[in-house]
Amino acid sequence: WYHVVEELMDDMVRHGVTRPLSFYESTMKQLAGQKQHHVALAVYDRLEADGLRPSAVTCSCLVSFAVEVGELQRALEFFEKLSATTTPSIRAYMTVLRVHAKRQDFAASVALFRDMERRCAGVDSLALNVVLGTGVAADELEAVDELLRQADARQPPIADVISYNTLLKALAQRCDAERARAVIPRMKARGLEPNHITYNTAMDATVRAGRLPEAWPLLDAMRDQGLSPDKFTASIIVKGLSRSPGTGQVKNALALLRDTDSVCDGALKASLYHAVFEAARQAAVSEGGGDMAIAARTFTQMRQCNVTPSQAVQRFMMHALPSASC
Image (cartoon, rainbow, N blue to C red; front, side, top):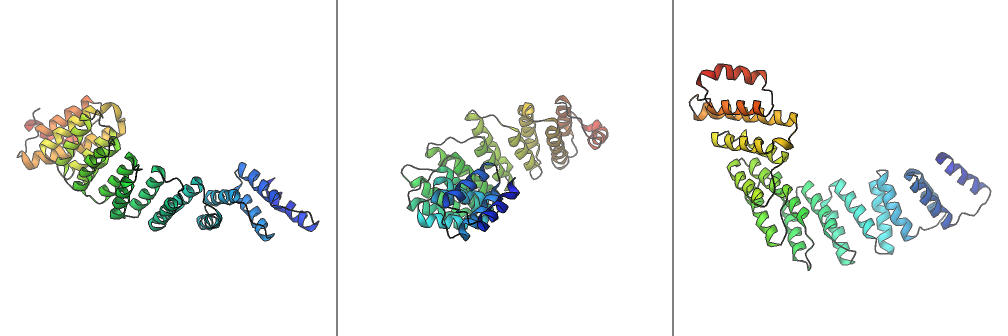
């Protein structure tokens, strides 16, 4: 019946039926309840054509309606009207922060965040983290770090673990291993406890920087905190082997794969083990003068962990067998 709403309103116009603000607002509310946001916005257009102005509550709802149908610019226009008449709700602010996030408009996000602060609109870690995430997407590392420091300087501080993990993501994207490692003690000084994402992202930063050996102390610290490595840990470390295919690195990776065996599915294990085998092959050739012991060890563990070696791996081991020893 939604397609006849505008026809009914046309009939009301022709017959001179009064259409007060309450009529339009209740109609939009019912349409929104049925997820008919496009139709609700069309009803608003008629409200406006009749020279009526929506209430602040309705204007706040219109922001959400426009976002639901992908009319982001219109959502911003509704928000501006709302903001000009009253302090928007935290829900309206969050909706618009997410609009800026979709547009990767970090400057607008920061400006809105400052407006929330100025109008005492309930700035919290949720709002902060949306702004930080927008900054990371826009590759505004220094501004993100500064905003996080300012959030920590508030009383009480509003930054949380997610805030720091967001900064770590930016540092990993920049391959900034040193600053990434420094984030962890900074978190602890704030009384925040790093989680799996914290350590994995810090390790990712070291791997991206081509400094795999520096990832192992992070793994040790992760375990010391009572956190077991997961499939993401394994994937990050194994990715680093392509740039650091030393025998010691391969042995450590094999130990990690054994530890994470139960949390990796068959497809992931196959991919990881074949990547480790390639690193083992390269290590054997470059370090061992053709000694295939590390490759043989990798091959053995693959089979023990129910990973079927590819035909290429099997052919390689057949040729290398005379020099291989576990």
